[in-house]
Image 1 (cartoon, one colour):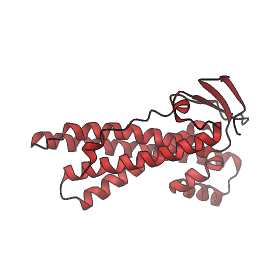
Image 2 (cartoon, rainbow, N blue to C red):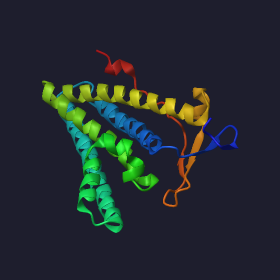
Image 3 (cartoon, rainbow, N blue to C red):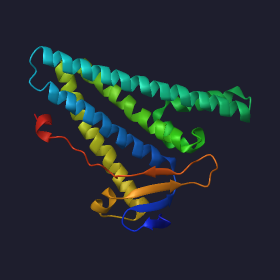
Image 4 (cartoon, rainbow, N blue to C red):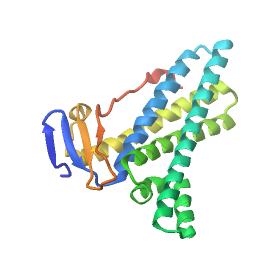
Length: 223
């Protein structure tokens, strides 16, 4: 069992960080829920699809997705700059700098090699958010290409987000059960987890309210 101690048998647990994947995965599913709440609310607003209301809803959704993309790109730029600075201090070998920056452009490598290219918990969390932001942008762009209208794009993106959220949350809950040794979902929902790390650059990382379990009305997303 991975957990080391509990500060409150019913509400709080302290566990060691064994992989940066855990932090990134939590942020991925948390970000997906935030996006889904927003897109679903917009979809509800434009549900009647009557002229101006439809245009307003799709325009809001498109602006939201564009904003998510802007945030993701800024995260990558900021992390890239940190890697440049860290690598410059460690070595002047430009090939190593190029290699690390190349790894940062591959989101799967960011996820898989977080311990090597991301120095602190905050950066790992940001990488997890960027992964989900980029996924949302890609889904929107693909749906815009294959759809015959902007409202169809919005609807299909909402359906995709619902499936993406369920998939990421499922992976997160499976991992959380292994980390904590707790198998009861109701107990997990009330649990606050604090990650600790012996690395001097890593602060304690606290997650509360796990998970929210938000799920919109499936009727609106049904065919």
